[in-house]
Length: 427
Image (cartoon, rainbow, N blue to C red; front, side):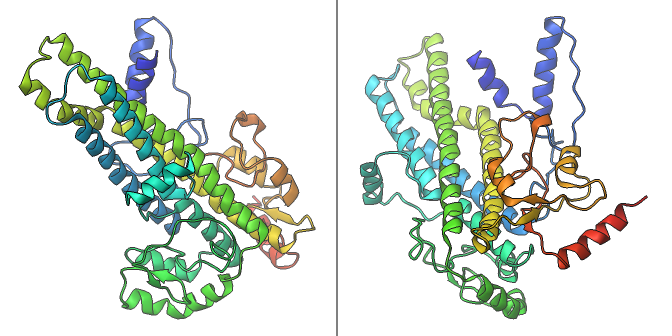
């Protein structure tokens, strides 16, 4: 069963369907595929070859963070395989010795720790191991997307539910951290431990940081608006906002550790598979075979495992990034009214699924209002609940959800928006 799970895990959508249909036919079992509803089911939509899905529904900042996370992960995977090949050497002793297997396991564990720490600042192992990695110079400055997504949610909420101009300028330029010069309070003033910003960054409009761009139309055009947006957002983090940042780091660290552990298991599975192949061919002593062993292990990994691993990684990054963004926005609302219980709502997009409409829209077509405490008590998201039991939560209603983060209700201004929506909803 474990081999079946591993193999199906590596198939793309259409191939997965063909495999399941073949198994069902061989056993004489009827099989039908249910209709999907806007990506709200328990699995992702099946994509056609070459088709891309807009997972963040046009939000350029989250899309850019995902792109950078994908590039970091690709580099990390290649370094993992290079490290394993170095341990195996040009002509490894076959079958592999216990000492060699132990070295591979230790290296995979070390690489796991590096990936999680470089992204989140959370170290999943003993602190002494972190010091050893620092001493070896293996700590790298990646884009810290869990923190950045939270701070972006904070800036979005402080800008009234709009992308601040400084972020838009950052997306249009090359390199750098979106919030490199973070608002006072993170990390130094706020006590939240976050890996340092790359030294290549330079100030963005309004005192932020941006790398690689040396002026030009994009930077100049957004300078004035960028200064205004940055001035509004450079406010020390309050306790709820710090809590949101720390939640994003810890939550992402937990799921990323599982992804890295899956990579380690996959690498060891491929090594064992190739070793058994060679043993079955009775050419263990062949120098030519041993010379090609590490290369064939690497090739098998890329051919058999990469698709499934990348799919899992993207699912985790997208989900955690959306959650962090929503948590950052919620923290701003709570920070402004720490002792009260403000009314909030979410704006849903055209084409939203029936469950999002049920939860977030009133019968008259206007957004449904909730007390913030109700969203908080319902948990960060609906993970683990059956679809019919989904509730209004702080985070996305479901994976790939297009709903906005929570917005505060303001009598007068919000009522004007709601009345317009009610008119548009009338037949």
